[in-house]
Length: 364
Image (cartoon, rainbow, N blue to C red; front, side, top):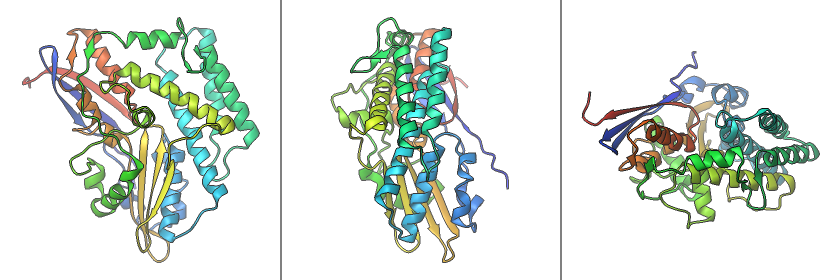
């Protein structure tokens, strides 16, 4: 059976003069997991998931394992739970570093070498879901990452880019007047929404997960949502620069946690839910937000239902956070304004590629 599916989001920005009148989003198509895997033993799917989900593959494996164990009524040891949380956090750090530095900045040879060192060290962090990485090599990898961040200008207790660094210059370039974002509705996904979401997943399947909503609400998930949870006074009209600064701050927090466990993270990094006879679900807080898996097994442990919901489906919903941030915004009429819109889209960090177009509202 073919695993091919359309893995890109199409975004069309409709302009009325210098104002964004509307944003039309055609979402990606997603793999039909129930159709692909119905009748197969649950254990056989674990090695297949990284082929389907090259980004955040550890988070998908942890979510699947946790959902299957919940369906079976199995209880995990504290050591296993901690090992899985550590694997998810290590992958989250790697994904955030990649989205911050790969392809964004013009780097000289020394800074390009620092990025390579950082990404090579992050590979050490991401061991298997079950075995994880030994503590000593993991700490050494985090030390290397922090050293590379220093070389790139991310220094000091606040871990903000140092003036004159390439990253500081990039953030400054995003703070111009090319895009004026209106104050938008603030709505954020949390662990308190988990049960509602996983029950909807098993009840409605792809009808829900392709375009999710919670009683008319389409909340944001990801780094900015986690930042608001810690600092609710952050600006409601956050642009690309503020969102990237939040990403840098989270990178610093994750490094500290992996190095010595000295900071608390948000609750429920991994949460699982037993939903009745041979039905279970899990939620995992990964780099781009909250990921959900829900499964139903037959009496032999084979897959009857397998549904998932990724963060991108919330953030790039037709009525979701990106659309709310752009509708009514005023942009510079030239290329700089379009580049500012692209930077904002990138700051929402979709897990797939996207195309971005512009046209006057009402034009065919």
